[in-house]
Image (tube, rainbow, N blue to C red):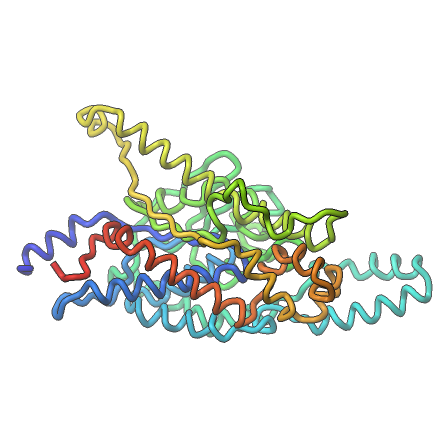
Length: 411
């Protein structure tokens, strides 16, 4: 392709946004998808056409997806290398890199002794301690210091490798769902019902806040308008996961989910068992409601809008600011709950005991699989999810290449 034509094509290419949703350990699936995308892009190149930059200059994420988004953004000048670095971490994951289970085990043993001394003393002691969360995620802060070199962002934006990075968190203080964003060019913040945007320099504290699963991990304090507010997982109250990418200028969006978009009605879920639900089963249902429902709803809404716009005469549409948005969604083709059920025994023992003896009996294992899938930061589980992400993406190869305008033959 002549250089002039190549430059024109680059200018004409729509701005691509990447949306990574939340899901705790389920976010390993996203890394597998990114590995496959990197592979397909390499196969589409010819000598002299190589461009190391990430194929999405706008990157947004929520919860564990925010951590993946930030790690990818920090390597936006070398997409292949950034993905390889992320994959290396997720492939070798252990729970103690994210949370401390040893302290929970000590609490569990001490609680049994206090129970022997009297329930009243146990309650009094519990109220005096006032624990902030079930697990201590201090190790995650140490991991972020190595995995996410945020100090690189200003130079990457200045050199045009990255246009914007956004992460979302939910304020326990105000009840607002807040998107924090850093952009190369000034972008006016937006305000919608119960959600708003704040231009800010993204820090590791933002990532800790966005990924603070309610009850499981402690809230994180972030400054807003001169005051400190406490934030938890950004998936809470998130009604429009793709909105941030659109506001930041994306003209087409790749969204990577953490759960199947549509469950077959004839399929019996792996936790559909009789009897009273275990604590783990209830917790898993609650977390799935927080993490998995919003993307499917937002995708349906966006597709309805695209269909409505297609019915408007072109001349009328061009006279307005409304534009159809090209959307590609990649989500697991298998139930992650079912995959997690095969690996529940890899959870730290203290976590299994806390939620009703997970892996102690087959029934508890199956019922608690959904809950376990969010905390299973163990290599056996993350590797299987990464493999699924790669396979699902390669199965959609034609759609991926069409979306990015790639040609495996090298046009």
